[in-house]
Image 1 (tube, rainbow, N blue to C red):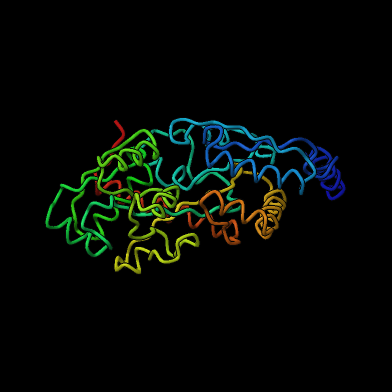
Image 2 (image 1 turned 45 degrees about the horizontal axis):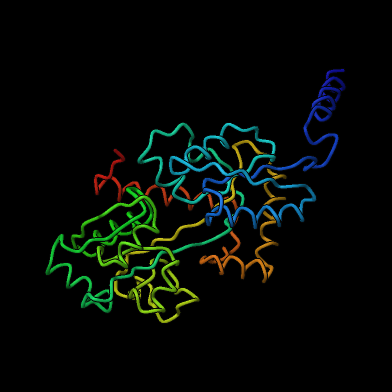
Length: 319
């Protein structure tokens, strides 16, 4: 009799399950990101949304939640129902940097990693009037002029800022950080001769090709396809240096495994399409390679520990 009761209760539980009456998804999906409209984050989110809409046969609505370095968007997703109908496309800094700088309400590890979509790296550039043509010459010049070379960033605690802090720790040089409200103003000031160097995004490539800036290295582990002659920082002799940004697709903690795998497979198929890959490259980024949710969870934790150490050693705070 007890066995019969257990079977009956199990049947009731299955009937009350959100997946009992229809296979997921049965309604539109919301994709939140932390960039303003027209930003790289927005463009990537819309590309992902378009592809998922086609593959999942449901509309995927892009929801822009800029502000507070991504904490607003991340918190909104963390508080959403774990039913697969709210997703978050965020950069690794939302999970690995923000917890060390802001009083956040979300747990950076309380998300379910789904897929890595895009990989991005920065490029170390200097103003052409400086007598510096490679990373070795930059280090020698900086050591001969401690604290005199300036480098700009898109703000305190940004990946551009942390790229410079990590460079100083890896080489023993002293640079003067100048934060701006965005990467574009920093780049414009550099073109005006008011900054010496920049760990900028790949939007600097056209300026390098025009001779307005001089590229010394890229910060990631592989050379950039658009500028294959520019070495990586490791190839330039900084063996322990690697800075890579990436856009992750995650869901609230508790999202069913079957839903996570369905979305992950859809993103994986999307990234195999040559036209999609080319669109990502045209945005100045690289399509991500396949990575399991477990691998991404480990990568987030490693990134969190790495930048926590840099932030603590450099005594970086947000005022």
